Amino acid sequence: MEQAFSDTIAAIATAWGEAGVAIVRLSGPDAVDLAKTAVRFKAGFPKPRLMCLASFTDKEGRTIDQVLVVHFAAPKSYTGEDVVEIHTHGGTLVAQICLECLIRGGARLAEPGEFTKRAFLNGRIDLSQAESVLGIIRSRSEEALRAAARTLSGELSAFAGDIREELLTLQSALEVELDFPEEGIPYRNDEDLLDSIATLRLSLEDLLDRCSAGLLLREGIRVALVGRPNVGKSSLLNALLKQARAIVTALPGTTRDVIEEVITYRGIPIRLVDTAGLRIPSDEIEANGIDRTLAELRRADICLWVLDGSVPLDDEDRAYIERLRDKDHIVVLNKSDLNKLDSSLPRPSAAEEDIRAMSGSSSVFSLSLSLSAKTGEGLDLLKDSIVHFASSSGALDAGLNVTARQLTEIRNSLLALTEAETATMEKTGQDVVASLLSTARECLERLLGLTYDDALLESIFSHFCVGK
Ligand SMILES: Nc1nc2c(ncn2[C@@H]2O[C@H](COP(=O)(O)OP(=O)(O)OP(=O)(O)O)[C@@H](O)[C@H]2O)c(=O)[nH]1
Ligand SMILES: [Mg+2]
Image (tube, rainbow, N blue to C red; front, top):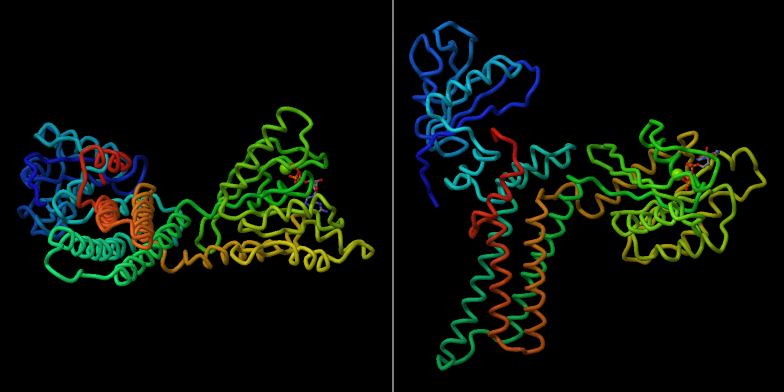
C-alpha cells in the first residue's frame, strides 16, 4: 500500500480566530526545503522532533514573527512523509501570511483531511483509524472521546480483522471442497460449519453492540419526552436544561413542534427531544405536531413517558403505557410537589406500582419514577437512570467510535453471515454458503479499507477540516 506523493501540501491546522498560537503544517518531499525558504534559523535547521526558535520574515526580509519549528522526519510522522510544523503566534494573520509564502514557494494548499488521507495511503493507519480521527475531532463528551481513542488505537481494526481472517479461512475451506469433491471426505460436516458460523456471528454481534454504543456516545442518547398534553414535558425539558427554552403554559396543546437540545451528564451527551402532547388534534398544525411526536417516539433510544402524577391514571393513560411495552422507556410521574401539598391525592408510589405491573416486556429497559419539574426534586435520579440505561447497553466501557458508514458495513456483514447460517441449516448448498461468507468478508474489508475506491475516500475525507 506504500505510496509516495511527489507534491508537498500545506495548511493551517488550527482553528480561525484569536488564540495563543496558530500552526502551519507541511507534508511531503519538499517540506524541509519549503520551511527553510520561509523561516530563518540561527543555528541551522532543527534535528527531527526538536522544537527550534526561528524568525519568520516577509518578502523584504523584515521579521514578522518569532516562530517555533518542528520537523518529523519520514517515515516517523503522522502522514509517513516529511512533516514540518511552524508554530506562529495567533490569531490567523501571521499563519495566513506564512501559508501564502509556502504556497508561493511551491507547496499546494491541502484539501480537507488530506494529511490523514496521506497517513492512510502511506500505510500509517487503516481506514477505520482514519475515520476515528474525525470522531476525536467531533467528540462532544469525554466518553465519546474515549470511544474514539479506542478505535484510533486499533481495537476496531484488530477485532474486525480477526473476524475477517476467520471468514476467509472458512470460505477457502468450503471452496476447496467444492472444487475438489473427489478428494475424499468433506472437510467439514454441517454441524462443524454451523458451529463456526454461529461463533463468528456472535463475535460480529458483539462488535455491532460495541459500535452502536459508540455511536450513542457520539451522537448522544436520544431521549424523547412524550405524553398527553399539559403533563409537564416542556417544563421537564426546561428544568433539565436549566433554562426556559420551551414555552410552558397552563393550556393543553402548547407545544406544536419538536424541540431538541443536548445536555452532558457524567461525561455523556443526552439529546432531549420535547414533543407535542398526544391527543385527538384540534387543528391541522397540532395534527402535524402529533405525527412528528410519533416519529420521534420511534426514533428515540429511550422514551420518557411523562404523566401528571398528581391525578389518578385513566384508561387512556393505561392504553398508552401498554403501547410502550416494546420500547425502552422510563415512566415519569411529574408534579410530585402537588402530592405533598394535598394528602388526599393518590400516593405516587401507588401509581408507580400500578405502572410497574403494566409496562415493559422483559427485553426492554423499563422504569418508573416520580419527580417535580417545578421544584427539581428527582431530576438527578432521572439523569442517572438515563445514564444507567446507556451503560446497561455496554456503551460506557467498551464503546467504539464508528461512523454511520462503518456501522452499515458491520450490519451488512452480520446480515450476510446470518443468511449463511440459515443456508447451512436448510442445506441450501455449500456454494451459496461460500458466497454469503464472501459477502460478509467483503463488508469487513471495506470497513477496514482493505478495498476502497476514490469515491469512498472522497466521501470520508471531505468531512474533515483542512489541516487535519
Ligand atoms: N405543580 C407543578 N406544575 C407543573 C409541573 N410541571 C409542569 N407544571 C405545570 O403544568 C402546566 C403544563 O406544563 P407544560 O410544560 O407546558 O406541559 P406540556 O406537557 O409540555 O404540555 P403540551 O405542550 O401542551 O403538551 C404548566 O402550567 C406548568 O407550570 C410540576 O412539576 N409541578
Ligand atoms: Mg409542551
